Length: 182
Image 1 (tube, rainbow, N blue to C red):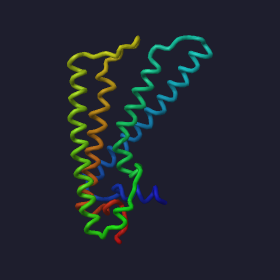
Image 2: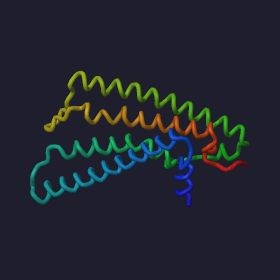
Image 3: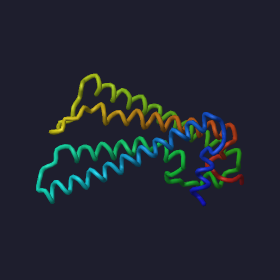
Image 4: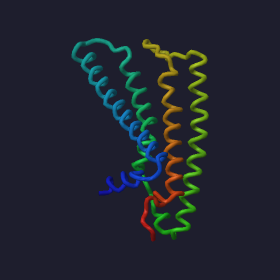
């Protein structure tokens, strides 16, 4: 029941903007899940090559690392959409509605600011790798702008979801901290 409540709260209705952001975050969640499945498949293939075929692996370890990191970053917006992160709602539960509303605005605005900073510097880092043509120092030698692209994409998607959360609270589609009125 809790999962169903979260899905409904995470914009079953609302404006076209909220529905679009929800769809984008859901798509990002599916992409993230796909990356995790791919990483598991590559790990199984790597184990087979190493221990059954007694061969060496070149790209598998690095690919799994990049896939898991990318899955984590790309999946941020989906986790935020479904409120899948760890919540400690002792303070919001103790507050009256007006104070709860102020707290949710402060929390969301602070989160938007921090994620915006991460997006800015993540993009600069990605662009630096792109401009310099950085490659990994491994035998595979992948161009690092490819895995680093998950940094600005992931934080950009999270920023978009946080803005949608703020809009949803402002227009009344979502209650502060998804809690019922005291």
